[in-house]
Length: 301
View 1 (tube, rainbow, N blue to C red):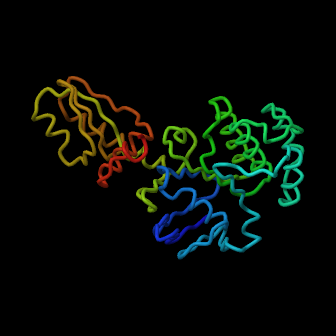
View 2 (view 1 turned 180 degrees about the vertical axis):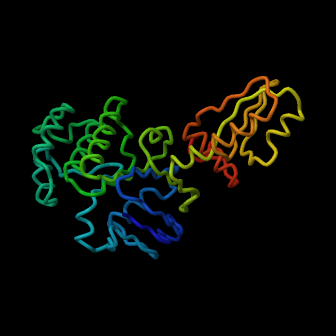
View 3 (view 1 turned 120 degrees about the horizontal axis):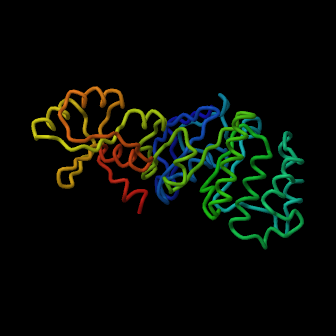
């Protein structure tokens, strides 16, 4: 488990990370979401021990990370722009990483290279951005660390390759308990893979919640009431996060379970009503609007 408590980092009087506290549980996919400049990369670099926090603590399986070789053996960090040795190829990088990580699986690595059509002898400098990202991810996966930290992992990958990497993550999680931590500015990119999501804004954590809990506790209802009185009766006592109206059709986002909504609407006279699934984007819009923020400006551009 990765535990981050009151983490702070300042660069030239600019506070990049401000009192961040989150817990990343084992064998889950943790999504760290935020706009450029929100502090995602700095947080990942402090988790991996590349940067030393000004204050606060980062522990991996109860071990402090910074300047701790044993803790770093459990981590593989992939930067937004992966670094490779000058004039190197995939074979040379495998040789280097297999010397650093004692559990590096060479056979698996070359098997994945063939699957992704990456030439082990081709100069990495001639690779496209997407190919470099693929190679970095495969090196990280085959290092067989407990945690893999990915900064904008899927940026530059086409949809097929993106799905391929997600499938490998799922396989490694099931077989050996890998814990991926994925930083991204794109909510839609992480929706189908994350178990827990943290939202960074201006260096601080705006929201950190289990995705399944959020989906179970927020419902989207479309309905047409027979009268205003029936609408007031249905909404009485419900925490309404968002409300929209198009003619007689009402759309409500409420904080409640599906069972509670069904029980309440069973006592109300409606012409029509249904409970709809929410996307991760809709959940975050609802949660952050309650907190006084407009996530559409923060994340969705």
